[in-house]
Image (tube, rainbow, N blue to C red; front, side, top):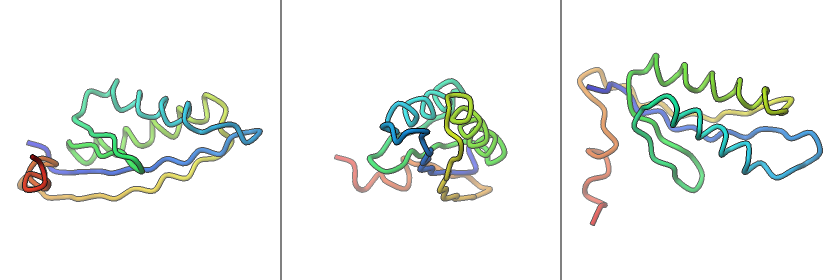
Length: 97
């Protein structure tokens, strides 16, 4: 059972002011490749899993930004740590139709 939710908004600096969307797409691909449950929202992406695994994914996302040309990155993260179980579905079930 997952013990954490981590939401991340990654804001890569681009060399010449290019659009950041391709960078964000690459960051989301890192999450996809990791195989954890996640949801993309307009201003952030939320992942569900074990805290250590999710924080390692955040690190890989930042590394990916550097690999594709970003000289610096701001990652704004929110963490819910609940040792007895954390679930996106449980937190949002009353809002789903």
